[in-house]
Length: 219
Image (cartoon, rainbow, N blue to C red):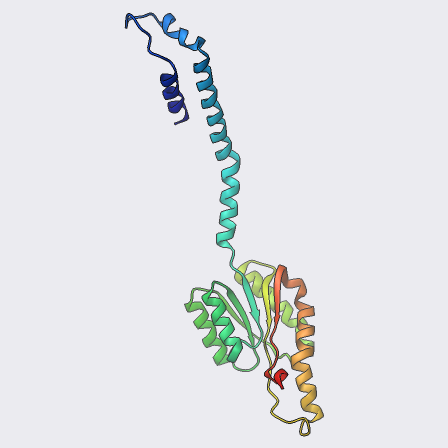
């Protein structure tokens, strides 16, 4: 294509030779003494060089970057994702192109249903059991999470951590017991802190952490 354009350029810048149409080849070659011809050839050579460089060096880079952007799917980990706000978050993220790992404490049936709903949206989903009251189990949970990341996504990290697991305390200040207060502290403060601390090595650079507070914070 470049050589064809160069040939056309030569024809445009070089006037037709007057006289006998049966001129010799030597006479025809005299057109290369014209500066316009060399200018046209130079333009053609530069164009060919740019064309060659683009396909040799630039195109593979652009293709690789585009392929990575198309292939990348973020992964979110949501605690308490089998029902309520956690379930709503999981489905909403899946609808917007995010794969989801979520935890449940005892509702295995509900968790399996949420996983199916996420997969029906075209996204990958994994449900893992976790009792945030048991902070001693976080080490084993992190190991299980790392295994699932490698098995399902061939990755070592995930992108978003949503500390959502929680409980409600329906008692006034005068009626709240020490055990109830300890439970609220354990679930809503200690668990998110220690779980986040343990999972930090598994969160990708530039990842996000979202802590969802209890409705009790409004009172």
